[in-house]
Image (cartoon, rainbow, N blue to C red):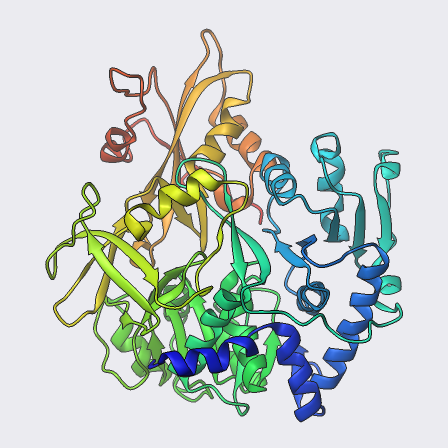
Length: 546
């Protein structure tokens, strides 16, 4: 992607969703914009008018510019309506993981300081379970077809509103005009060892995500984007829905990823572009081969990553180009394979012209020579195309930006032609089912149990490791004279953690390895890996409920 300074300042103010939809509603009012699965799409004008009404309802609840609105919704059109309508008011969307509950939910809800939440009825009980810990929520808009039931007589703590009533409010006259430097969203990503951090995202960062997709894939109004990744993440919102809206394409939203249904769904809606994440490519590849696998409408897949052991055959089998890249919520995806470039196995492509990407010694921050392994660091060339910082965490922001480079916490190497190769994570985090998990978030839940003295959570490479996938192992020290069965500990984890954080492996140990200063030596535990004493829930025939 080639972008000079003139080009940048020409497009930057067109990236706010209010500007995008105002333009499309005027220029292509009857063009299909958005559909649920293969249902009849709504047009750009219908989408625009619907969001003006929802903005009116939110405004009646007092939502105004720079207010935060929490969103806890499964994949649905309602997620997109809420995101757009919040931004129409100049307010800030805070989408959070739908699998969060307990301490995970409490942390992000309180840290965001959102006063209004939009919640699906199936998740409402989670709020009541921790109601005495939630500090800021005052109004909850409930999305769902059934009647909301209150079983604990705590409904007086919040004002509860019906989604249909809010969405049928008097519309606002028009969206608030937004600048590319204004804050559009706070999205939570895992910390290194501490609680998850809220990434403060200006419209310029969201636009950078989207513009790269447009330029790399040559996206146009003729394209159809298939979206099955979770809409509480930046990938689905800003690398799929937003670029499609910018060019006037059609977006089809699905409830989630199905390896067995993926190709049929792609064909059903005529999708030309889609994204995959983590092990999705491997799961698709492992489906039974069919003679007509190559007969499909796809032009390209943004696959982060494309496992190198199957990449060539995957492209040939499905007659598609896989575009790999490297990035994160804080920075956008800063390297990509170009559409017309040959496949370079294992490479995440070259840096976009908007960013500098380098490899440095993780101890000294000195630049590494070509093919030298070190930490991947990034910095933008243009203003507001990066996060503004971590919400309520200035020290973490400064730490990440030391020596005027953003430190990703990932190790990699770069060849003499500038192609980036991801190697591993330096930071103490675990990647599972497309989610980053902090070890401390798991340990906090474990250590709160009265039978547990201390614990350590580590990443174990899974059989899908080529897709960057980990399994969770916990090493647990019980208090004296306590007995805790593996099955009971697993049940406790399942009740208090999102499904993707629930450990697959459990091992009871007498003590955890530590330095003389009592700092935990997780490297020792990682080196030990799976031992004869490790309990494996899959070997025990236990499945985690999603």
